[in-house]
Length: 240
Image (cartoon, rainbow, N blue to C red; front, top):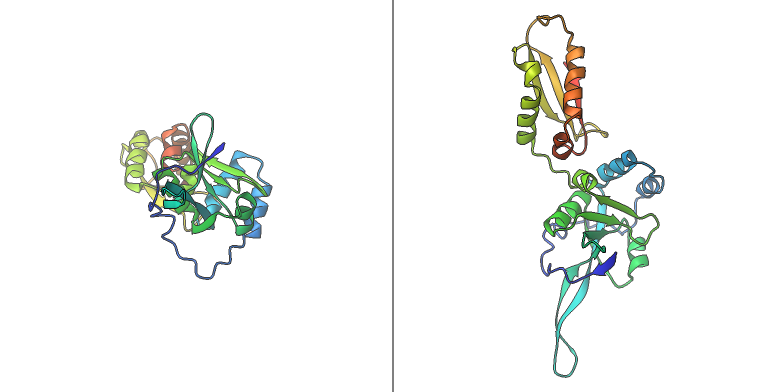
């Protein structure tokens, strides 16, 4: 990727500049660095994206010259959030875990602290398709596609509930079973949403157990790609 500072975001650091970190000295979290260093699989990257939601990252801005005077001196300039663009034209917003990795990339760049989820949301708002963490090391991580969605941490529970109810209608239509969509992001480290199945009455008319219905529900939800998009951080099924 090549550096791209001409991205038209002068004064547009709404999300990136919103958070305040008065006691932050710019040091990276050693546990996070270790997690990034040891990443080997897609599941590892999902875990990193989830962990980064509540981690302070450093986006970066640089001065971009807009015009010069007749004497060749700078006349106008603005600060622009820095991204990188690959040969296909896909843009990735740069972010850093600490001032050391930022300085390794560009000692003159100005750090802008923000929560990881806000960095991702700012990237999406700016038309980027990825967030690139620590581009110059010590361990470069690219979060794109579903991984960027995981980091952005945006759940439309109303839409998700409607889709779940429609998908599980074959199991709930007889009125014996209810399905409840529960946001568990504050309780669970490995999943965002649980579909909790509750038996309304006694035994099922055809003799199926609640656990059998839960397995069927998990199979239905797991087979539909739409639920990965609606709940990219993971969706599970529980009973009771």
